[in-house]
Image (cartoon, rainbow, N blue to C red; front, top):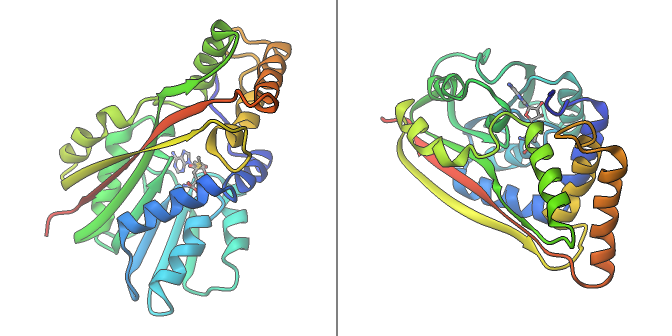
Length: 261
Ligand SMILES: C[S@@+](CC[C@H](N)C(=O)[O-])C[C@H]1O[C@@H](n2cnc3c(N)ncnc32)[C@H](O)[C@@H]1O
C-alpha cells in the first residue's frame, strides 16, 4: 500500500500541525540538541514546509547559512515562502539518499521525522556523514509509532486503525535500530533522548489531537479500514475529549552524534 504523499494538501495540514504547541516544543528540543552558533552552515534534510530553516537562520545569523533539501516540490515551495526575507537560506529538491551538496560542507545537520520515510536508511546516514565536516554534529528525530498508547472504548478498532496508520511510512519503529545504524555509518558519541508527547486533554495544541486528521484521512483503504470506520474512530475521540476521557501518549526520539574530528 502507498505511503503518505507529501503533496499540497498534506503541506497545508503539516503547516497547521507545525504551529501547535507540541511542534514548537519539538523544534526547541531539536535546536537545543544541535546548538547552532552564529556563522555556522546548517543543513536540514527533509525540511518540509521550512519551520526549522526559518528558526535556524536566526540562530546562525547573517554570516551563517542554512540549506533545506526535500524530495517534495510542494514542501519546498512552502519552505521558500517561509524564508523569503533571508538571502542566506537556499532550498533544493533532493532525495535524502543523494544530497546535491559537497563533502564536508556543513557544521551541523538536522533530519526530523524524515528517515522513517526513507527505505534505505544506511544510504541516508552515509549522506549525512559525508556532508558534515569532521567534528560536525547531526540531530536525527524519529517516532517509535509502536509506543502509541491511545484510549478507546473500542480497542479492536483502535488497533486496526493504528496498524493501518503504520502503512503511512516505511519504518514505524526506526528509533529501535537507529543508534547502531548511526555508529555503522561512522558517527561517534551517539546519544538518544526520548521525549513523551502525551495528553489527557483533547487539546489541539498536543501531538495526538493534532495528528488525528492525518490518520483519519490516510487510513481508509489500509488494513481493511473503511471510510466510515475511520470517521467513527475520529468521532469517538472527539466525544471522549468532550467527556474529559481523552488519553494519548507516544515516545519521540532525538539522536545526536558527531562526525569524528
Ligand atoms: C513529516 S515531514 C517532516 C518535515 C520537517 N523535517 C519538520 O519536521 O518540520 C517529512 C518530510 O520528509 C520529506 N521526505 C520524505 N521522504 C524523503 C526522501 N526520501 N528524501 C527527502 N525528503 C523526504 C517529505 O517530503 C516531508 O517534507
